[in-house]
Amino acid sequence: MSSFRGFIHAVLSAFPRFPSGAFTRSRSLKGLLPVIVLVWLGGCNSPAIYQDDLYNPPVYWGRHVVKPGETLYSIAWRYGRDYRELGSANGIGPPWTIRVGQVLRLDRRGTVTSARDNGSQPKVAAAPTTRPRAPVQTPKSAPRPKVTRAAGRDQPLPDRNQTVAGINWRWPHGGTVIAGYSTSGKVNKGIDIAGQAGDAVRAAASGNVVYAGNGLLGYGNLIIVNHNEHYLSAYAHNRKILVQEGEDVTAGQVIAELGSSGAERPMLHFEIRKNGNPVDPLHYLPPR
Image (cartoon, rainbow, N blue to C red; front, side, top):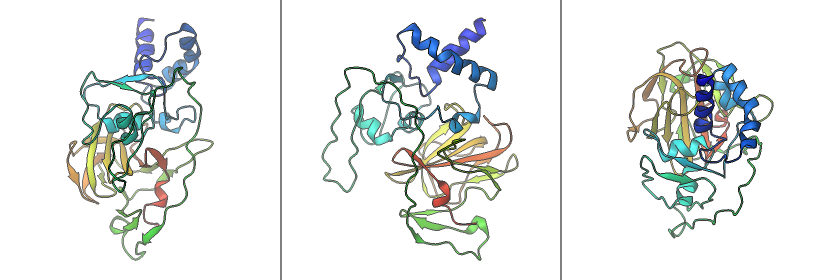
């Protein structure tokens, strides 16, 4: 029983829909018990986390205490927020530096100022007087982005690339897609690509590594790459991470070894997020 109580505490501390410090009434814990039991039975580090329509940030209540190894990017990813908006809400600006023990308010909403804007400082929205109820929602389908330079079909798949949203994209792995992006039914915030343990995982586009670690429940060893102020990509379940936070990577560069950390089989779970929201990677990657 003590181990189960410890598990409950760990879930309440780590589960993104339930920010630490957000629950102050026993009835809140009572309502959580069915979810906790299901997670306990299914394993606390299951990839079902990002395929569960009951687990869909954004979260706009509670607060988060920064732990060792976390970055603003990984925390924003965890709570389904744009890192710029979350930073703005907490008075944090470029280069988005946070410190261990720092408290981030999730009940505040920030604003995002594009580099094309007039450069005025973003304003912090006032915190709501009462804690809003966390809504159950699924990511909405985004319109298909415009392809400005299509890939050549005569090229081998690993060498194909195409330009979408001003970014040159390529496949991070050439394996079979075993689960596609979905916003309804069995929700999947990205695509799952089959492979063999140790296969090369490549950066889908050039950018900067803003997170490399295993602190996000359900993703195993995870890499997040920032491509520009709007787009991030993520590479989950790696066996070994080959890059470090702050490192610049180029499209096609090997950044990890494919694995099964946090998964039941060797595979790559790949996501693209635009302004913090999941989008269908197949709208960006070259056609097969």
